[in-house]
Length: 310
Image (tube, rainbow, N blue to C red; front, top):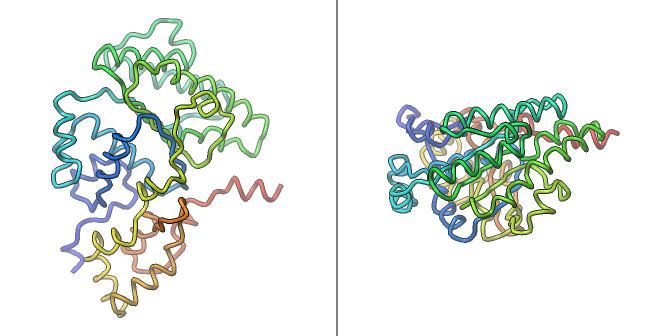
């Protein structure tokens, strides 16, 4: 029976790869259309392994007008219109940066932006390439000159700070470096169409929040409470075949299995109303058909445990 089921996208965070491999995708594109239409500057905080990277990857494809990836999805028409004039997109993942110290981090970030600029045919001035903020601003303005208002998507914005959270002096130095980098966005407002940052926590003094009062924090807003994570309705509709296969393998009824899944995995609520399942836990459970603490063992916030011990 499992051979007939659509492949589960375990560990897959790239929307285009997921769609081209015909993996199971819970369609969040309608919610993302609403997000884009409702504003232009957003911050979303969620735990790790909760779908933040896939969300930014989906937005990337939407703004680039990759309509072939959205066939049969809610946003197909919106993306088809967008394809008439694709937006330039700059997507950065801060979790990939070298954060041994601030110097390494800034050097790595400059190199990444310089390489991206070169691949887009943008020549950064020597002064721009000296610091991350200069390279960031130079690339944004260069992309704007090429294709109009730019979309900036930054994943794990706070990872460089969290990696140093056990050393307050190092964390403070990284915070100052990020403050200078993110504040560039406010000065580039005229060049930007849409901005979204994701992370695990909200460092209110990082600069991106204190200096950018137009950045809307939707982390606990009911309007977008289900933009990531699986609702009960999505679980039952999109994973119907997998749930049936699991129930058969575990020799229980579908209703009994759903109840136990709810008891075991339905533990997230960020807006006070919408209850959610963690995607990583659900995908791994349906693949293994065993009840385990999948999310905790892969995404537990070890920096909090270290902080509590100290």
